Amino acid sequence: MSFMKFLLDNWILVVAALASGSLLAWPLIKRGAGSGGVSTTEAVRLINRERAVLVDVAEPAEFAAGHAAGARNIPLGGLEGAKGLPSNKALPVLLMCPSGARAARAAALLRKLGHEQAVAVAGGTAAWREAGLPMDKSA
Image 1 (cartoon, rainbow, N blue to C red):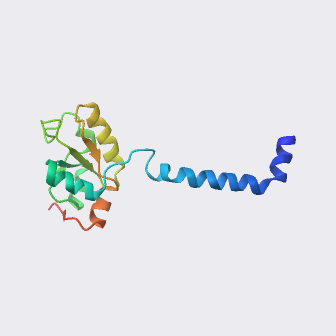
Image 2: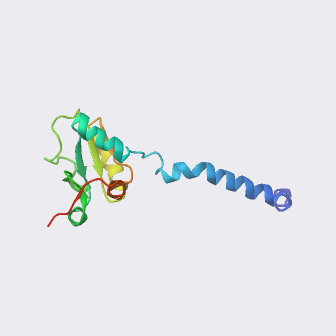
């Protein structure tokens, strides 16, 4: 009973504490609980300087609708044992999908398979397009 009385008497403090906690947690939620990834600028640097391989893990129909120029399409479901992955596991592998969510899962899977530099491109194809980077469409 005394706890409820405290909440009712101090409802402004309770609301302020909840709002403060929400604002502190928002960056973690927005980032996808630590999935992170590299920015499009960093992805271009890795492609140009470290010969990174760009892999789009979207489904074939999504890939055909629009993808980063030069990207290989290996759907997430067929990633394990795919022939399109670099045999040199030390090369950086940049993973993309339309939003970046599947790419983060794909990066974690490839790191487990030995590709130590597998990383998702933050924001996926949408961020790539927004940055004005070259896009292709399959016929």
